Length: 439
Image (cartoon, rainbow, N blue to C red; front, side):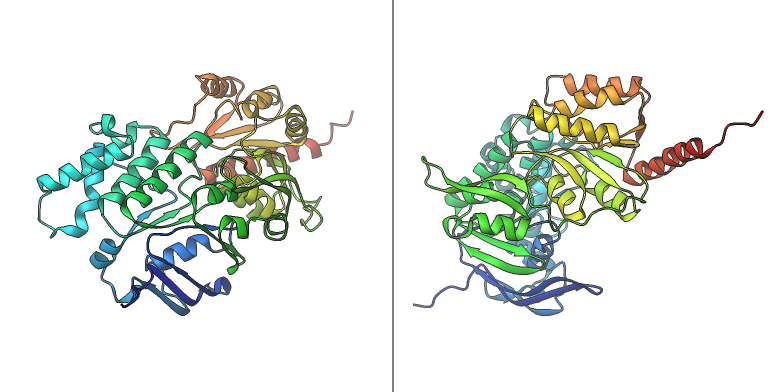
């Protein structure tokens, strides 16, 4: 009997962006029906690998095959029948009903002018039921919460009925409840349908809980590959993420998990004391990462907090050498972490508030910020239309209103926030260097 080709085969894959090597000699296979988690620090090559599997990138070296066929030989329609994609973010402009949005996933199975069939509509209804959105089928895609929207994107991908599902950091903007919900549904659907899943995930503990296998990337290379029991280790977290941790075993599942203790800071580059700033960024869940990168690229001294270890923003801060107040994953902010955060707020010459989701575990970030808002310039980024950020029964909305009353400046995007930082810091510099008039 002939052994079927694996769902994914990557051989000696190399990808460059200009002079920067994004992937170097990466080899791995994914058997059909397996759930594989890709993990690694920011910039390790996870998204580049996902995009290579989708055929969005032409590799500089090596090959990518889907079910035995080089991805470059597949037409766009053939590719869409083989692999479905749940992106890290999707810009949604039209407030179409969820049922219609899910039906977009049927396009590979029809000619351009064909209409959806009764079978398509029945499939969309069944998938909406499977992802827990049957009661929202007639609601607009922009009117639902972030967690529901991510499930809707998953539903559209499932409507393609492909044997391979790729997810690029699908939980990066979700709170812990929605993270668990989404990954539970993905694993259940994989088991019921035999779909192969490759998911880029930041959280090692989530990867260990849901994936059959974990592949770790670091600086574009595959540095670990195996079952969660084989891969998770204190040495791995220290070597790849620069975090000191304790390995434990969950008594109920027998799976390993890591308890981060502290950042290993000896190798972190120290910011120049002559750089302007510090500018403090309040964020979480990935919302602050673009701001941290933009400010660092502009040469500012930057601080951040309070963030949870293994959060996207915490990893970005660590990779950029940004000093941050950090807390253990998913834990409420402790008095010590809040005190450290208030020190950073007090040292800041400007504060930027990212459009981050606020729940009971991180509401203290806004509460601790308010006393500083009248003395320090505060810049608040507006969320995208239809994005729900308040999961604190209105407390976060009231805190943002209080910031507006205290004189905070509200801006539309990251470039506008950086321009506002330059303006306010230039103003404070002029004030500090102006000599009093001589009598």
